[in-house]
Image 1 (cartoon, helix red, strand yellow):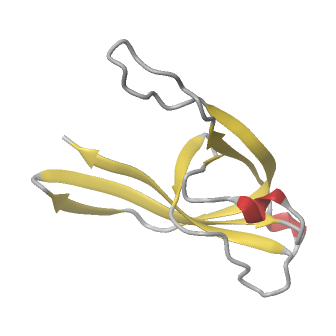
Image 2 (cartoon, rainbow, N blue to C red):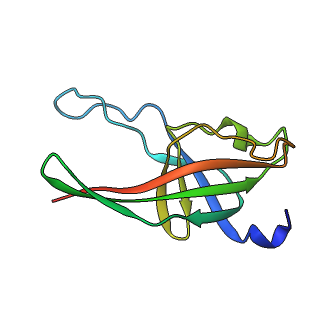
Image 3 (tube, one colour):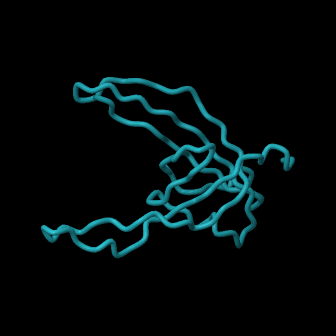
Length: 117
């Protein structure tokens, strides 16, 4: 695949451990910290709306291809990480796959949006 399709700046973030406790003793999540940045190709699919538990849910899905070698940190991405691309934050909905079987790129399924009241 030509390099011209990989025109989106991608930042993969992971939540840091040890966010501490609040004044009630509840564990607090850590901050999001950059894991790595790369060039990618974001392909959005049309959004969908549905009614769930009496609330309108509006979500958008996309696939993201990141150029990667077999030793790239992209293979360590998990569903607990998140992606920033085109000024939007996307949740990762699946483990990274190698769509062409050559170890040249990683593909992720992404989702953003959610319940709206």
